[in-house]
Length: 602
Image (cartoon, rainbow, N blue to C red; front, side, top):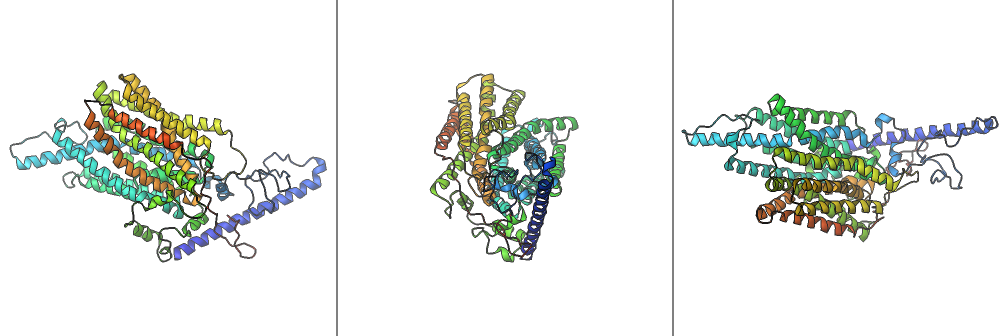
């Protein structure tokens, strides 16, 4: 209770400072007008096109302004805010101004560390399991002798079916632990980010990943003292932090706070591009580091350092994208889970309490809102967009291993040729997200308009990009089914990579359907669906491939193309310009004159 009161007092102080700043600006502006009126005949009046007035509309101005004009139709030379979120940033210095570019560079290093540990982690687990397997066998059979197993070396004696089976089961257990826990935690982190800020929750997610890296390092450093099963505890901490799925969702929420609705697909595309760039470049750098140092643990130490630097950068440099006022507004919502208990608990204890259980599917209720200002069209759009996005994410996760196994089986590719294929596909995906998508958005939408814009759901441009992306994905997987040569298979992969612009556009469309204080909640719900798809989709598609390989090995690609076909059909039922128009209820800060709160202060 005391913490919330102190937080509310800080929010009131911030509001007063903004009011005082606006008041001084208005006084200065009126004084400038008086001087211009007095000396106008000498030509001292500035051109109204010059930027001699602030970019954002004064909330305290008495006249109603639309596109820089007063209610009487006179131009006042001001450029109004182009969306509601800009008012929150008025008067901030550049170093305290939230922007997608604050988070993007360190996020790129974060994803590079994530991608760089994928292969070394698998090899390390295999060596540790192999070591324990042969140790147990030596204890039961004194006549059995085996060569020393060095971590990170090519231990050929480990490439036996028994060890491979144990490694496969172990990685499956780890995926299930991390996936199930992240499915439980991701929506809660998303909802909490609306109430307590984005950066706190991103830090919490990063902390889980840090602990996971520490566990791996400890087990690899002391293999005689710590069992390989301790790595499963690392997966647990990773899942409790929400894993990389929650990290992506929270990054999207941060970008939504500081990006105009019509440009969010580009901002989300930057994060997707950073993710795939990290997955593409990380393994190459990690392989080079292991080769030069001869120690596989070096990769994990570097990853630990990068994740630590990312955490410190969040805490010390990156500005929070949600003002204290907006956080308080979200906490005061009646449908905030735990609203009745928050008055007697601090947020950490309350956070631990709501993690203990409850209906796992309850967070999905945000996709079927039934309150005021909602309607059947909103509910239908939210469900359709979430379904299409989950299907596309599930195919991306489920087909990754199958494509590599199929290419090596049919074309006889070695490790180098497979790596070239992966690099080409990921490079095409990064180019699509970082270059092609921004260019397409710029051409279709034109330069940023000065007109005030509100969230208005998906428009026809969003829907066109989504359908085009699904079509390219579907054509790519149809191509996988038909082609019988390696170069054409790679070309199909490049075509499917163009479909990568669909996911960020779908995620951006979701945020445009809900009020700003529901952004974290809806993206958290998508984190739950993504975590479920991360577990279910690979299981289904790997079973399909295992059952049909050698007879009609392309069956799995037929199934994948059919999944995109269904998603393409569903996309035509999404209606444009549908929005959950919930009334805005800003936190009321004291008026400096009479102490009475004003609804326009925010």
